[in-house]
Structures are given as structure tokens and as C-alpha cells.
Image (cartoon, rainbow, N blue to C red; front, side):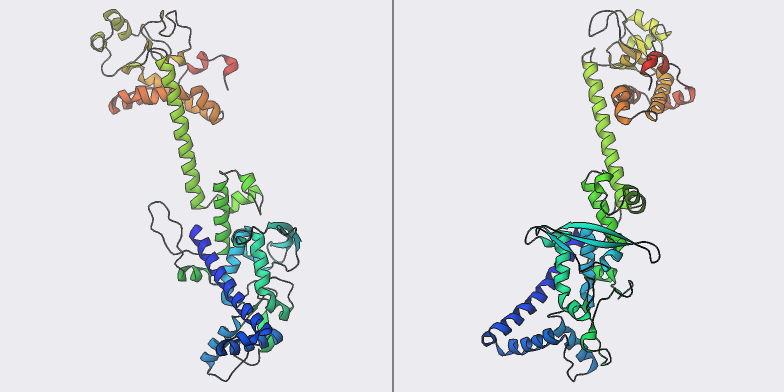
Length: 446
């Protein structure tokens, strides 16, 4: 979208400079013609005649040469249909409005302390129905008018003023059209292209983008392609851009539509906003997971430093080889040290207090006395399933605060120590967790 806006502003600046140069030459001719050279004097005389009569001269030339000559001469003072595409697209982009609204922009407006313009615009609905809306558009500081809807609107009025004076249109858009045929000549060549029919002249927006090398924004794993441009595409892109700038807060992003219309018709199906939202969600999940891991690590460091995980066969010999005292290994092998989902090697001496353990079974995963063997895997997987069910019944913030550290401990400090085959076998043996509801106080259950 940035490249499109840059190309639009570049074209609009060129149009403004072109007409301003013609106005400057006309002013110099009227105030001090003696200062003009012979070539300038001839051109200025023609411009003065056009300004006074609204008629572009029709010299005796071949048809093709006549068309080019008249277009070049008229473009010194008047907008032409070729100028409409960049001007209307930039107006639509800055105002966050569709093409129909831009086509029917009125001349009537009110200046608010030279800071903003107030006007009533038309919001077309199906058929001939119209809704009217009063808007206030900021003009912007000097030199930055092409970045603000109010400044762009006033520029449109200025650039179209001469043609509008001859066609007497109440609409802002008015241009000079080049008719080679003498039947359509004189001031009739000035017209408001959308006053009688909103279809008006074909603007060929995609052709404009192609001629200026404006490409579609890159998508992941796809090459940039030619931009299929339309007013709806521009409005959607601007709505997407504003929504992203405001962090996805739709009430703030909604400018010309309700929140519901903005989401349903402009954002929900847009691939850019979908990709961005997925990226934001992924980043948020990564942040939440990292916070949960950090909370688990802090709690574990205060209570022993590490969980003892012993993969492989569950036997007294294997557990003793893993470092457990012989008596503890024998008890653990037959399940005598099991708690809720794991085992505890020294219930009478909690590492943080040296006294009998008083914490819940969920806190076992942040304790140096925690022992996990392959026999505990099915229950741990059952617990993960139960935690995922809780996740659907409470807010994400509450879930991460309450269960995130436990989830992180199981996912990062326990499951990673077992082989894929051990985890697959445990998946087959697991049932439904029946402990989580018991270890939490009833009034704590979400």
C-alpha cells in the first residue's frame, strides 16, 4: 500500500504543478506581458483566450494532430479525464471512502478555522437509495495537504474550478474532454463526468498501476504480481492498514463503517489482515508461553532446581541407576510414591521449607522432589487434555496465569525427555483425567 500511495501522490503533485505553471504564466501575461519571450507570449495569449471563453482553439490540423494539439493546450489550465484516476484514488484512500462517494463529492462545504472542512457526502446503497453523512476532514499543515483528506478535497476543488465554472456542476469533479468533432465543441467540452451517470468514463485503475510499475504487496512464499486495482481494493487496503496501525482494535479502526460492517465486508476475508492476525496471534502465544516457562523456572529454582525425569523401563534397578536411593527406587517402581500425576521422592521435606509438603499436586511440577517415569506418561497426557478443555472455558489471560506454568513444565521439562515411541504408547493408554477437578477447591473451578 505504501508504494501505491507514493505513486498516487507523485502523479497528483505533477498534475498540480502542471496547472499551477499554466496559471502562473497566465498571471504574468495579464500583469506584465513585456517580460515574456515570444514562445511564452503566444502560449499565454492562447491560455488567456481559453480562460475567458472556456473554449480550446481548434486549428486546421489532421485529426490525430488536432487531438494531441488541443489536449496539450487545454492541459495547461484544465483537468482532463486522464487526470481523474490518481486524483480520485488518492481521495478515496485518504478519506477511507469508496469510489461512488468520491464521484459525488459536493462543492458545498464549510471551512473550520482553516484546520478542517465540513461537508455532506453521499453513501450509496443498492439501487438509487442514498444515505447522507456529514463528515469533517482535517486539512493538514502546509506542504502536507496530500496526506490529509481535507487537504486533498480542497485541492480537487482548486484543480477543477475552471471547468466547473463552465459546466455549472454542484459536484467537485469537473474536467475538459477532447472532442474532435465540431458538433461537441466550445464550453460543452467541460463536463462533470459523474453527475448524470456514476459509471462515467472508464478510469482503468489497473492499467494506471501497471503503467507505473505498482505491484501488489508481497505475500508469504509468493512473488509480487501486477496489482488488480479497484476503489473497493483501495478502501479495503486502507482499512487493513489502519486496523494494523491501531493494533487490531476495531472500534478505533472503524472510520466510515460500523465495526460489524468493517469486519464482515472489508477485513474478514482479506489475505493481508488474515496473515497479519495469524502472525499477531502466534507472537502473542509465543510471549505467553515464554512467560509461563519463566514462571515455572523461577518456582522450580526456589524449590530444588530441577525435576527428575527417568525415561525407559520402570524398575528399581533402572531408577537406582538414575541416581535415586535404593529404598526410594524400590518404592517408586511399584507406585508407592505416586501423587496426583507424578511421584514425590520426599514428601516430608519440601525443598523450599524443609518441612512436610503443603502445596497442591499442580505445584509438584515446580518442585525438586518431583519424579516422573514412563508409568506417569498416560496421566500427564490426560492432564494436558484436561487443561486444554479448561482453556475453552476461561479467558486466555486467566488460563495462562493459572495453568500456563504447569503446561510449560510438562511440555518442556518432561515430555521432551521421552522418546516418540514412549509418548505414542502413552497416548494409546491414556483415558480421561479425573484428578484435576478434585485437586482444586470447588469455588476455584472456572
